Amino acid sequence: PPPPPPLPSPIAAAPPPGVVALLSFEGTDDGVTSQHTASNGTWLVSIPDARGAHTGGHGIYCEVTKAWRVPNLAQLLLPRYVPRAGRETLLHLAFYARVERMHATDPQPTVTVAFLDLHKNFEQLGAEVVPLTPDWQMHYVVIDLKPEHVGHSIRPYLYLGMHAGIYSFDDFEYKEIEIEDGMRWLQRAPERIKAKRMGKFELNFLDRENWPIDYGTAKVKLVRHAFPLGISLQTLPMSGLTIDQYEWYLRTAATHFWSGTLHRTLLWSEYEPEPGHVEEAQRSVEQLLQWSKAQRWVASQMGAELFDGGHADKDHWSNK
Image 1 (cartoon, rainbow, N blue to C red):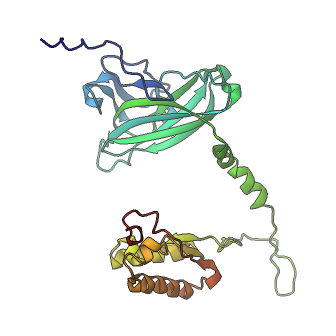
Image 2 (image 1 turned 60 degrees about the vertical axis):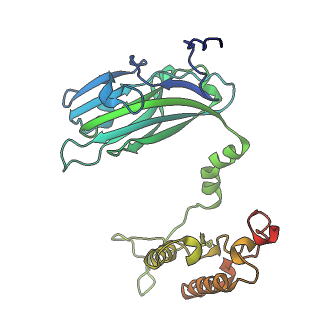
């Protein structure tokens, strides 16, 4: 007879690479606690609770029956995370959540996710307000941890004091992501913007006799950047939109941008899907170019090139 099947192993499967903690609340609170720091609101927290389950049998269930109107006055304290890598890393906190409003007229509830450094007198390293929906949705918040945070206890908090509602949370994942060179370049974008695209300026208002007007108030609005802020546009056939939807698409582009390129439309596999069949693509491209001229987008700012995209498409006729 064949050998009996192996007995189920009590050892759980290893987490995916980079994942340092998983919270699923199956029969345990997984180290999550709650506290409120004022008496002008009321809530009920139950962990683990079947009413808060996204997958499995349990999750976090929380009823805020009277809101504190200040987010951090009602807190869920998640387990601490201690960075051990000797280099800059990102802590990626992902979770599933949903919420029900107590009354139809209530504002849509939110949760504020904050990260506090317990070794620095609960210094807040970052926070993000996350809008919630009645359906289960996955959310994630990322915090940048520097080498000086190595060995510190970093605790994520969920602040629920702002809005009344019935909150459910489940399937938390802590994941470490090492900072790569490209990510460093992206992180330094605010510094480059401040150095290259921002600066002090002065506006002087003069009356008809060229005397300075130094009274009253003035409202100044930026109409257009000095550089050609643009967008990549699709033709109607490639967009897959209806005519009404495509008109809205172009109106929106004209409202926010004043230059552009043709998005992938001139790839060979798109422009000539069959030998000699270019009429439809040519017509749609010409229509988009005419539209750009009507918006006073100069020709040099509406660029397009013909790319040999046929060989990249194994089903294109040029490969047969």
